[in-house]
Length: 428
Ligand code: CMC
Image (cartoon, rainbow, N blue to C red; front, top):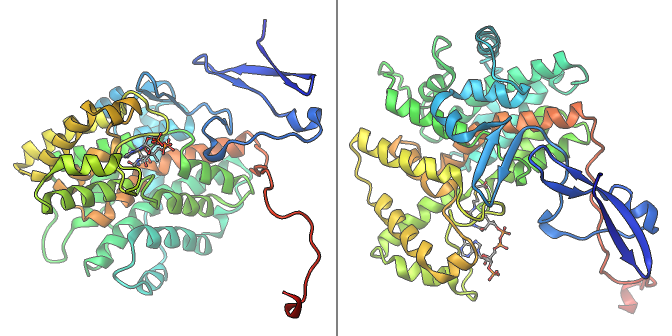
């Protein structure tokens, strides 16, 4: 028997179906609520209790610390797959066969150039511009050079737009960094794999032959996989809601990049390193910063701690913590900031404030330490997150289009003034 929920308002009873996901999650289906109740709505700021869609892409269980892409565990994917395979899996639903992967790779390589006029747009930004703002603008600007990316009414047109952005996005990301460093813009080398080519595009020097580093590329690959999707988070919901107006893929992604930029979301990885640096500069007194984070009068929050969904541990943070230690060890880097991070995590994990609120280190707590070890400048950290999240955004956008979801348009409860007559300036 299918489950039902009953709502009683002023003695009137209304029944709503309860839908069950494949992992037995239950959701009250209130699609008919306003119709049957005569306009009563729900209110849920921050959507803490609201499911915006049904999705077959990513499953996460915040209590058990489970994260799966299309059914595959994040632990197994991080260990056994590469980023391009994971991107294909997320976007198209299945792990690619050798031929499918080869075609995807070739199609991407075929598109991995950007119109030269895009360089003029990049040129217009001051060097001090934050890379996330630049990346969002360049992604939006790409539409003008690829007008076909807007008309995505067929699977084929969608595929073409997907391949184009998978190909051009790393070029744009690398360019934002090269511009800041006054390095000539580069197109990488299409004989290299996706991640290795990204690394080359970011770090190659005009007067030096590029030498690939296996440890670096493997760490980068893993980081991108761990960031590749995370169901209906702030930036993904943004991508879906912008796309629901039938804005094209690139426009939806550009909005997602802006959403990711914020320090409560992807921007946290930059904020974490800045916080750890500040603690170090202040003598490394972690207890002082724990107290600040607990003080409700103080706006300071322990960056890299807490998560809307994970209430036990963030499985990505678990993998990244081990990875950070390995990468630093393999590269022979001693980073005092890692010790501060570990000290801070130890104190916080034993502190009643954090225990009671179920605040644990999240993915961003350790990722910045690896990015730093890989030589990536702090202000580029969130761009790295965006590079990883790209296939997730694409997958979610594609799913939303294929399911023909209606335009996203939440309701509100109005709490402003009631009707009042206009007063001319002399009467005010
Ligand atoms: N430091 C100190 N207190 C915190 C923190 C923190 N980092 N995070 C949450 N709290 C407290 C908060 O003050 C509140 O306390 P009280 O119940 O006394 O009012 C309680 O914990 C619940 O917090 P919330 O803000 O209602 O929780 P949320 O689900 O709305 O926010 C969050 C989740 C991730 C925005 C938040 O934990 C936070 O701001 N963390 C720091 C930023 C960060 O690391 N963000 C990266 C998230 S993971 C990457 C991603 O996917 O974006």
